[in-house]
Length: 100
Length: 480
Picture: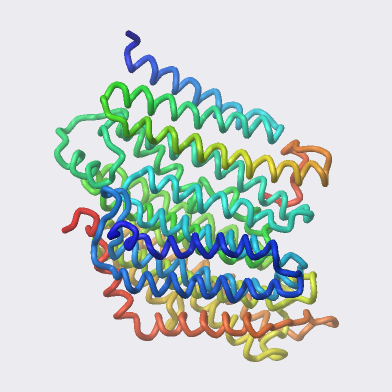
């Protein structure tokens, strides 16, 4: 039996990997994948805690998160396809018409 | 049945939005304007349903959603801003050749998401509402899909918004671990009965949740996306999201922090006070240097988020009421300013530079006067809504013992007055250039201007009924 703490550490590690990916990588699709890793890190934490607490709430939450993440991917890829058609690249360093 | 009755305004919005999407397939291009009336009808029906459900505290679906004075008030703000956004956007969309049914459907879906967020009594519902709102806004921001700026705004909003959502979600997961629940009611009760001591999961959870929400309402240092997204998105969409996203985000903040996490107020309130001071100072100082009116309003929006946060910091009934009052006032004055901004346009070309406003007060007296009114209100000059809103939040902060924050806020208002009044000076004291910016004022835009100007004055001159309604909003969560 693996203790809950280990799962939480693993999920924190995933969250950090995703976070670093968002900060370091420059391709919009890879950044988006990193964000998905962060979401799934939260899912892992939910499931581990749900098991620990013996309540189903956390697992139900995960189903909703999966659906939301799928919707987010659909919208995100649509926006990226629109950008790629116009510019031929989704490198976030090349997308800087707005001075932020 | 009771369950469905409580969420009937949201059901109406969802139904009408679906109907619009369906009708859009069959309507010939020349008759798309019918969809405007349909969406206004749907919003009207939702407003009536909201009135009929009333503001008495009621929960539904096993306590997952509920209506109470806070949700009722937030519903009003969200529905009003949607009505105004539809009115403001109608002609603009036709001129930009992008009047599709999806636009109205997305505005209705975004409003639905915001209302769900305000009505959520479970963090799951708050999260779902937030995502429905955000996903609609990502699409709306990129609505001119062949326009490079609009695309860029959509991508930046999407990446940073999804990034923020993952923080929020991780925060919820840790809170769940610390308290064993996601229901805000149970969460509040569990925390109230908790023995002292440091709980790492709890503190991390509250912090990450705060970061996620701070991104959504654009608090410094999580504001970087705001000016770019506001500038790149189509103006009518910017107008809508500047108020709707703020109103929904703050409704969630007001429910989660002062109410569910009320027992931990000494842990988070000082932190929020620092964030509020930073947000208003940085927003105002950068706004001073802007020459594009859309960016100016974006930074001014950041500063206003700082003022509203003062009500959260105060965290008592007056604080919550003043924050809600501020949100309503901001809805009127900011949408009004955007309506004027959209009026300065010819066909597809928009005139967004401050210099385009030269002599506007003389060329178009009514348009100039209403812009002057909105600028005075944003600056906080009596007898406008912005003045009373500021008095209330400052008063709430002082009452809660945050005198230093109130002093910072007053100094900030002085700085802010400079750039708001500069717009008025440009409009009235400068001669128009050789080629003055053309004005195209459609009937629906004029109606929106009239409504916002009325709201700005009404809230400034006769605030009592609205303030009383807002004051019931505190502690309604625990049924006190």
